[in-house]
Image 1 (cartoon, helix red, strand yellow):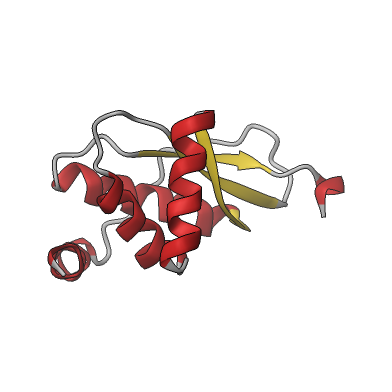
Image 2 (cartoon, rainbow, N blue to C red; image 1 turned 120 degrees about the horizontal axis):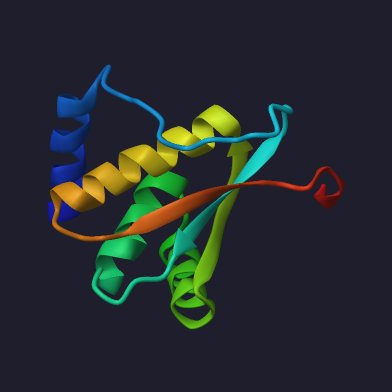
Length: 115
C-alpha cells in the first residue's frame, strides 16, 4: 500500500513536467518495446508493484517479468507508441529515484516484421 500512496504523491507533483531523454535516430514511425533492465539493488516487491501499477500486469505476470530480467538481464514489459514508451520509462525511473532505487527501463524500436 505504501507504493500506491507514493505513486499518487509522485504523480500529483509531476503534472506538466514530463521531458524525454530518449532518442531515436531513425525518425521513422513505429512501435517501441519497453524493457525492464536488471539491477541488484531494487527490491523485488517494488519492481512487481511498478509493473502492476504502470503496465497493468497481474501479480503473477509482473513477477515473471521481474524474474526474466533478473535471470536474463532484461524483461519485456510491452509495446507502445514512441511517446507512450518514453513517457512510461521517464515517469517510472523518476518515481524509482524518488524512492532511492536505481530501477531502469529502456525503449527499443520494434522491428516492423515482429507483428
